[in-house]
Image (cartoon, rainbow, N blue to C red; front, side):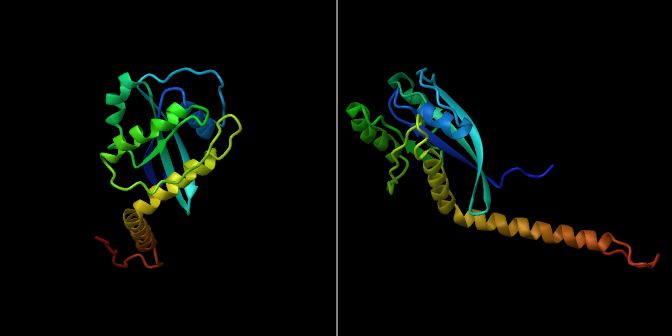
Length: 182
């Protein structure tokens, strides 16, 4: 069975309750929009594979509950995430003001932000794919050295398999010595 992806990344959606984190996730992974609001309890996730610069990236996207009572649980996921979305509702000044609190939670692990800004809409599908793809690109750039090593390893493995296959093919003589690739 062929490998379905080259690398796996964990992304995290954080922000106040009711800002649309789950809606963004469902729009990106399933291309669906559900206008009714059901609060996430604890943490949930979905997966999707996308291709960026010829690399198949499996994205595990964690959707966190925004209620304060779940924040001790969701903070545990910060360390495992390679990328984080800070989500707020443009029609809620309160959720925007809380972004700095969410950012300070993240800052305990990251010293510099260098954040991109995307205005998105799960309802109209505005910038959903673009924002997830951009964060994936940034994570890939941050892990470029590791990925270059992965590509070199994969190429070496392919060359070794080709050499083994070539060595095992008969060359027309029954008593030819066998070649061993160790």
